[in-house]
Image (cartoon, rainbow, N blue to C red; front, side):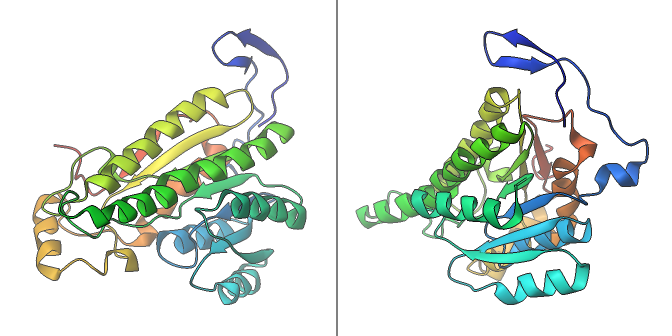
Length: 280
């Protein structure tokens, strides 16, 4: 997205006054050819589904992992879709590792156009006031789900500002909108609410040079939910209007929209993809 002229808004600084030049073909709008995209937490689950979708749309892709190696997946994406792909190991809760990794991706690929801050962990300990030892679990959830997101934004924002363009997408959760039942997960709910508000706030702050949005998935069939007993999942299905959990493929369209030129007028938005859970 190229800004030709601007005016000054005291709240946020220079704002664009001229619309970008866009293709009239809708398929071209959704294409990511010529773009470099990177997705944290993409060795599996939602993150890998998004990375593969971006590669299918033509983007060169950098995938992130921590404990679960993903070099083979990067190789698969490159060979299957004819794009450049590489895997990077980093602890998302370490700001120095995050910064080093992002700048390495920029060096390897030449730039970053799309950044998906997706890495996250669930709260699995139930009632959060049961025992004091859970302070460490609280800290771990927030270090990864909130602090890690901020570390990514802090560094990639500099790259976006340098080039005058970029799309940052946070993986939030419907849990940032509601308090889940019947499971108890107050720390996770609070963390995801923080991610949604950080996204909206950065959208205002970065309006002169980049777009920032979030996506709030509902219950999804991934390894992250393996700890949940079957009987609890059956209770979920009774509450979800569509009556089931989502496939990861049912989320990727939302990410592709926010990554592509189809969404150049969308910033500060949160897209709920939750089977109707938050609708009532």
